Length: 242
Image (cartoon, rainbow, N blue to C red):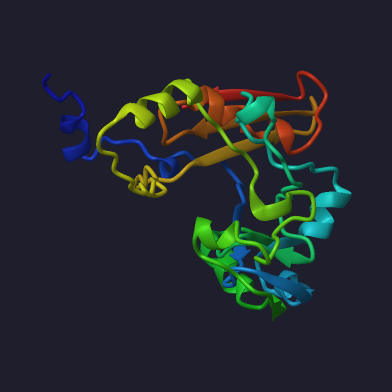
């Protein structure tokens, strides 16, 4: 199958998220945790909004007060014995505790991306480190540090497929049997352009318009990802996937 997209890309006709702009638009950047597991002892973003060109700074407490809910999870099929996925609360911005490196804990909104990045350096954060593990086996061992109180043993979901009794019988009849452990590494489709969106709000109509570009092959799913974040009246937000 011949490629069709090369000509526009090599002739400077490609369109990327940064090419979609609106008059007076703002830019957001996030301060992310550099710890795998820690309590947030102090989080003070007050110096950042004073920076010239900064419009606002937000923390997890602000997001909670604004009505944002837990981030959604798309696993909706039953697991072993009919169990359902255990879904601990996942705030849009961490509150009181971080549970992985890169977890967002604050957001800065400014007139330009560069200003927002500079202001992010003014956020004062202090952590109290907690024990952390870096493998599945270590996470499910007895006595391992617990990430969520409502997910005992750090096991959110267990899935099985096939006929367990038939497999056991087949091994019992076998002359030789081998045992091996297969590690399934996390795979990420790490595109050069990440997921991004451009949102415009019309104060006159009270409606927002999301002009979104999705880097993955499911733009419809991506455009629906915000459904679990904050309750919105029907028809309040329109979408134009790009």
